[in-house]
Every structure is written in C-alpha cells, then in structure tokens.
Length: 410
Image (cartoon, rainbow, N blue to C red; front, side):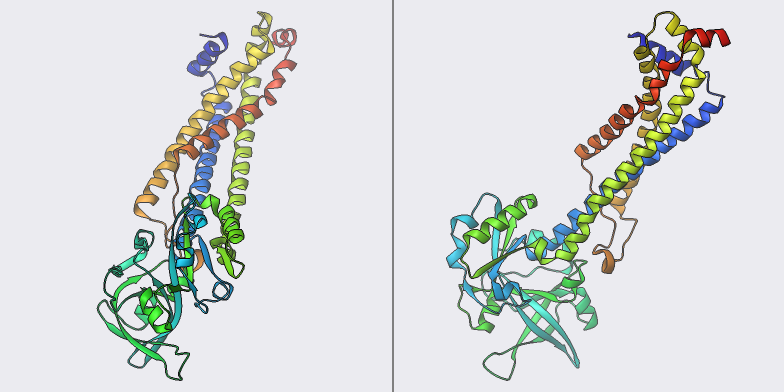
C-alpha cells in the first residue's frame, strides 16, 4: 500500500476529530454534496424527460416532418391536393434515416348532437399508419380499422366527447363544407374511441378518420392526398433530413419540421438545456466551497502532523495527496447518499407518478422521468473530477507550513 493511502486510512479510522468542530463541518459538507447530487440528477432526469415526452407527443401526432403544398403547410386543413404515387417510390423518401412516411388529409367539420355543435378538424390516415406511435394516447375504446372495406368509424378527443356528452358506440352526424353547393355534406359516423394527448392544440381540435372518407368528400381520387408525414429513426437528424428533402422535392412542395410547426413549444423546451447547465454549475460550486472548507479545517487541525511528516522527509505533494484522499472519502459518502435518495425518488415517480402537473400549462399530466445509466455515470464522474481538481488549489496551503515553526510552537 502506498504511504499516502496508508496514512489517509489511519486518519479516517482513528477519527481524532470525531468530537471536534471539524466533525460538524464534515457532516454539513457531506450533506451539501448529497443535496447537490440529488438536485443535479433531478434537473437532468426531469429536464430531459420533459423534452423527450413533448417531442414524442408532437411527432406522434404530426410526424417529424410534414411534406405538402405550401398552401396546406400554412393552413390547418388540406386546401390543395397532389399525387402520393409521385413520391411513394422516390429514393430520397426511402433514405436510411427515414423510418417511414404516410399520406394524410385534413378537413374541417362540425359535429352535432341534438342542439349542440362542436367544430373539429378530421385527420385522415390510411392503413399503413403505425398506430403504435398513437396508442399511448387512447384512453377509452379502440383504434379504427383502416384495412379492407371502408367503415364509418372515428376517434375524437375526450374533451370534445365530454362537451357533447358522447360515449363509445354513439352515432353522430358530421357536416363538411361543400365547395360545389351551399349545402354541407352530411355523414354519420360511429365513435369507437376517445384520446387525450395533453396538448390543447390536439385535444380541442383534431379527430382521426379513414383517409378514404375525406378523399370521397373532397371528390379526390385514391392517389390524391393533402400531405405526407415523415417519421425519422433518429430525431437528432431532423434538421439535416428537413433541409435534404427541401432541396430534393419540387419547388411547389414545402417541407416543415416539427420544430418549425410548433416553434414556441420547442423554443420553450430548449431553455431546459440552459436551466440544467445552470443548476449543474451552481451545485458543483456549492460542493467545491463546502469541500474546500473541510480541507482547510483538516489541514489546520493537522498542522503538527504535517510538520512531523516534513521533518521526516515528506514532500508537499505527498502530504497534499493524504488530505485530498481524505476529502475524496468524505465527498464519496455524500455522493452515495445523494444517489440513493435521488434514485429512490425517481423510481417512485417513474412507476407511480405521484407528482402531477396541469396539462393545460405544461402539456403533460405528470412529471416525466428520464434515466440513462450513461448520464448517471457521467454526472457522478463530472462532480467528482471537478471537485477534486478544484480542491488542489486550497491544498497548496500545505506548502506554507514549515516544520521549524510548527514543532517549535508545539
């Protein structure tokens, strides 16, 4: 065993400072480190959890990228049409970065029950749509069957359903604009499901329907659609693929990423990165200040030992390592306690969702938790390395302690 490690271990085991003022300072410092680690882990887990959940919700409902004529991307409804077959087999839409893409049509309608009316925008999907992306939002009923024969099925937001006092299985008249007549086009649909995304933009406005219904109502043929929603394998490639598609597609076709479509929301969640960084910096500074105080107190209490070690030939670097090893053990205790508390609370929230949120304000009904073992290790290593490197500076006071003065005074 190395000499500095041996002496540091003896110092810890003897604990001659256990009844001294330094003991209380050590406990306070260890507690401060534990609290700092808890807050850093909370900031990362909740901040990144928010970002991931909101990105998941917006992309699940709208795709990562919307491809449509300019009029359609600037409107909530499909104003213009284009042929899906012109784009279905092109190389740049079958790029390895693209997971899949689906045709969509949006059209406004009015739901009527007795003397009550509600406006809605129906989004038409075809049988290739991957319902796994949307199934987590379904709170009652079933997803529509878009295969085979055309069925008069719709799913609507629970908020609209509650306002009209609708239930699963109800048949409700829907009225669509008729461009060729002053009279609206009337259809009766069966409600087979209710959904809730937590986003007011979706939950107050949109319903889902078979795309073929909207093609018939618009008098479009089977290949004509209002737009294409593109899903990516990795959302980090969003900007690259958006620019790539914009350059490749014809000049009359617009390409909008989900970040542009919901710019205010994405600007808001991008602030989380800055908040996480600020919390990390502040908590690390608190840890450094507390551990620096502990280090200076230990050095002042052990000046006689330092003098003896120097008189026996010990150099400053050797003695610095002895005290830094002691500080490392004190800090490690705080980190272990902080990790234990943080992981316990994060586990409880992740599995039982104890802390709720107002979805009108935060777009989520509960505090989301993100946990990655890689992030967990990097945070802990970052705290340890930053604190230990910073503690090297106050440990330089050891070089100012001279054996002749210390031993003479003792």
